Length: 315
Image (cartoon, rainbow, N blue to C red; front, side):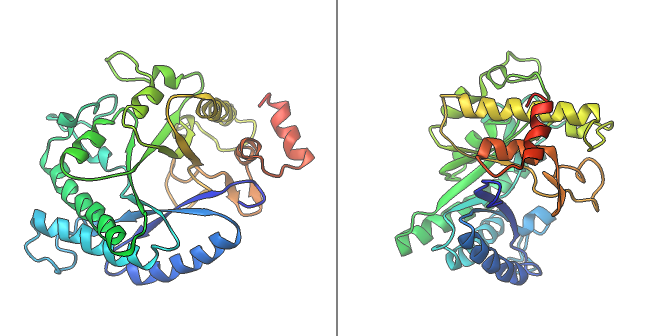
């Protein structure tokens, strides 16, 4: 990452009874390396409720909404307080908006623009977990004089998730947004199902908070015919899509974008398609052209051969 001009790294932390002891030690080592290479860490907290555990292994046996609040508060307070001098942004879970469904049980793709779209028992439960987490970080700030920030995530058109969570007392300072698009699409006319397109950047700016685009990739990567190799038509189209996305993010003037992160650094071949092929690299010594493209935008080091790969593609 240092050689490539990349300065931001998002990493998951599972705050479950079985995982947290190992996560603490791993995170300590990650902090040391991040400091050495001038990398800013963006931890993403996952809670036991994600895995269906309402009681946090019996710590809160009622399993009611108060138990969910305590789970979010206590887990966050204990973990974040240890690292309050090293990490300043804490993301409260990931893509919770995707759990929401309409009255027919269908996901809200192309919808989810209002808080009312998320008024359902599962989202009320999640609001308790996330409110506990945000309250815990506020308490750490009060006690220590720190200025830790709370990051809340959503995706696609589901910006009503932010409104819903705020209406339920979940406080947040930064929006994290996931953006996957095919080549030829314009975020200034963002797709919105049957409703009129909207300007994504102006809509995000209306929340008056900075934004991190902390999962970016092409949407072509989801297609079954995507071959994940140079010369493959969909892989080449993906590169054009990524180039266009980077340019839109660089050139827009409406919202404060603090960082852009591509999902993800390495392929994960143990996973099923398409989750096995999102990497900028196949493995540590096998970079993809996508890494060269991101490095060019980030001002990182590129060899003559790598520059040729970009130039021959018109990237």
